[in-house]
Image (cartoon, rainbow, N blue to C red; front, side, top):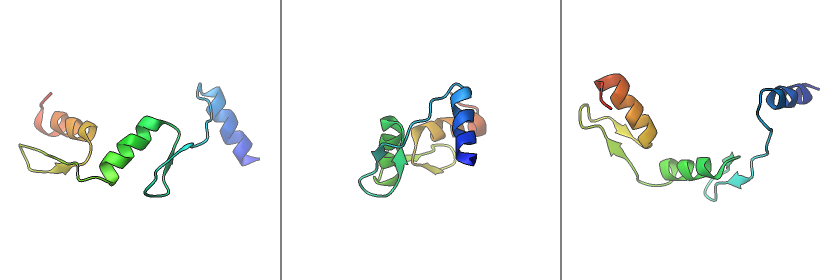
Length: 76
């Protein structure tokens, strides 16, 4: 009953419900979009990192780093 309600909300909100079909080969995470799986693999299962040149904080994702630059250092 509740699940039907949630699915209806998702469908009427302009989104189509899709099952998670992209599973990480290294852990149990699943994603509905391949790009999200790729982002997860890069940030969770590799040594990729970005060091902030202003405060030396370390980031695993470039989008989070860019947001940090904008909000903390008024850059970009």
